[in-house]
Length: 356
Image (cartoon, rainbow, N blue to C red; front, side):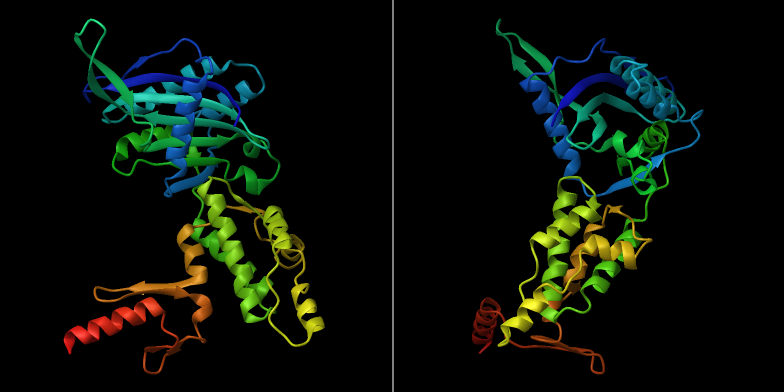
């Protein structure tokens, strides 16, 4: 990562009948190991949270001016210090419209990656701790809860400024604080976040495309390809990045499925090269498919695994087992399991012996 600017201001409101107050920091911190480590911890804390929303800036700049200030900063018409101060003042205005109580620091961080320019906003809480100073007096200090971020936003400036509607429509990533409704609403309005994406619907469309792509493959190779897609998507989600169709196509090309076993080597070789480039397939067969998506984790996991549970039974197995070692009969609503795993077989035997 290349951290370019970072600054924080404190905002407090301990009584809903009073307006909130701001303690400003004048200038950005000088970048050193301690500051960069703090930023890294904040980023990791947000990446670990799965319940994020994706969208874009509202077109109503009058009510939501943050995007115009970011534009001015991007065009070097405003310093990062001034951007952060204008932003925290606007957040104060939104908080004062509610009865939300607040005491924390809002961090603003500007980062330049190889492909993307990012602006991060973190609301960071703090706790107090006692310590004994050099004079052996007991004093009190703050420590930041950098590993527990509940409210944040990430603006991908590169995506926001892109002419690609799919990129610009999900340039904002918002982490909402589920337990603090009023504060979260004030923060969301301050950002100007709008057009929440339907990740489940987008993921369903994407996985349908993958199914169409693999439908002519032998069963094992189709499963291997689907699993590779899911593994790649989950890895992208883990590091907080979208799935880009062209990049996924490269991954599939470099990691083709193993051909099904056959006595005819030529047939096996032909099977292995049967698939077209995934990006070309999408462009020709699925022109409405988004070129970048942020897939839903639960939908991805369900795509290659079948699972379910009630109060007495919990079951999960690879989708490739269905029709092979696991057979479902809808007429009797029953599953027949063949080739039971050795560990399960051993536990069943011990359980039966205890009851004998």
